[in-house]
Image (tube, rainbow, N blue to C red):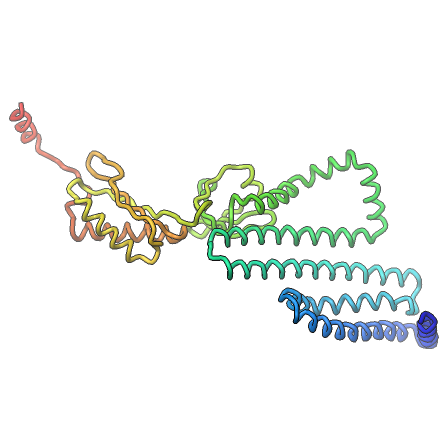
Length: 369
């Protein structure tokens, strides 16, 4: 077998030596690409046939990485065939080094796609099977954080592998490891912010003080967690603004998570009415409004006299809702409808100042005395 291969190589070299250099180079590279395409078509057909009987992940991965695998095989076969081309040793080394760098980048991208596909299928399965909203949000948060961390780690490994193909960089890395004392301190100080966020991301994924769609009150702003990346968290405020905070903020600083244990958020509406207003009537109207609202989750409801002031009663209406946005909508709806109801049916129960002429007040005082 080895003799046949050697004989074939000798024949190719004999043919290329008889041709112009540029034509020989085209033939060698073109032949390697043709062989790579044939091998790729055969392997894809074989892998698809095998993967069709396996988990969905493998078939999707093959389909998504088919073009990258084609490029990788082309680079692999061209790198093998390039010594047959009429190039100088330095030219051959240059092209092989170039092909190696591109090949590493292709493998890095394939690894990132595989991780992304695995996480996407996992999330889809969790959303389909889980009826627990909190559990689903927990899995979504963990998956997205770990996916971004994993993607960053794969990228760092890929870039490191490409850099290590250069002799000066490799020698520098060896010397850096050999003198890891002061150099490691300098590098550690320089990378401290990035490392803090990196480890904060891992800690957030494990402990989960925040999750996607959690209702937070942070730095005096109320909002919802919209996105968690590998370095920062995006909090969407009620008016559509975005608050950007580093990951380590949620490890080192206190904040209020209003949906940590459950997704229920209480809608609150405060009304100030005169003492002449019958509370039972107002309670009945508030219940009608809450029960008719699509934002109420059918849970708790209460109408109470929350406070007594000199001229008014403070009536508090509360109702449970499934999300912060629903709580905001229901609170606004209750305020509008209850005020309209008071204006229309009980205008005298609206807040007003009671005044009495001084002479009548003195007369009443004298009569009492």
